[in-house]
Length: 496
Image (cartoon, rainbow, N blue to C red; front, side):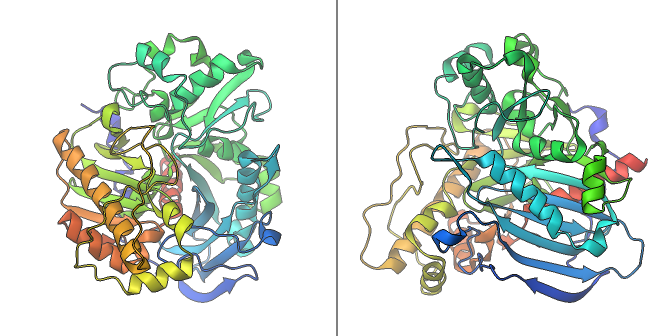
């Protein structure tokens, strides 16, 4: 049973009518010098075109509209994905009034990418990109980030004590210890879980552990806005062991010495506090603008799609593949990489695979993807059987850190090769939904698609055939829109 406070007075927030511009009117689309059309292939993947642009953050597209009535409050959401970040600015009806995106600048430190610096730089770049004439109307801000991307920071300064551990990085050294303390098949019993990353750091770090705090990517970026270190949300905290059903960390976790690093957890879209004065003054946000807890990128994409009924699902096709199914039952089973996030009085059951668009980027250019896709017959089954991965290791529907990519044999015809890869990814998606049903989740009845892959119509038809279900592109496909909905939710609750 879920606690009664799950039935939030703002629970119908995500049932807002899908709308793209009303009550606003389009006036302009701003294109910048360094714009790249990242959607031409139907796969949302940033690609630097030359060495000169490698360290340069570029805003590729921004769109803005004019509010029909002066004084309307706006709500800002930012999505920090695997290859870039976006913002969406919406009004109280869910209409998009401005949006934009940036690539991560690739700063390097000792020959490795300094991701923390890249994310921080991009955060402030996105704030600069919000049109000046809208900033005084912004009532709240929320951010989503990649699930299980972990940062251990100094609890006094907020500065990282070590390099961030990304969503797909594994810590197999910590897995036996985590399995020895956690319940069997718990969500944390995966080498890529946040808890495994925390334990691995704890057992190897030389720094003063007494003054350390664990944060997730979204938590850390929001900290720059509100200044209150050590706050997270229950979607991001799931993979460190937080139990959203009882709204607390379990006793077996609190008994560990590293539990002192765990952040305080709030519901997604909850006010943390007002923006810091320096942020307000630098970017001309109003004095009453608040920062709200965020969520993971796949949850934000689900919120954006406006799936509201049990049996409806959202597949996010970006650099990776993430699946979320709205279910009346909670399912958690680390054997299959399956876990459940809470969404008001229901559960989002699913997981994330390492397959996805990043594999395609390794093989084809955007132009090739576009041209080759046009030549595919989506109603014809491909005989090729691949398991497309960028490197060794899979999370879902099989949690196997030793799984090797399988992309051979490669036919001479590139149309056939692309067809085989797209269909193989669709088969992985189908296996994921079958696994959820076998484990007791509500049976999937309809699939909405988010992410850049949703624009590839041939891929959609392939997936519809393979899944045997209606598959369509979600009316809103960007996780930044879902983050903006959380900001709206937070502002509504804060005013009550």
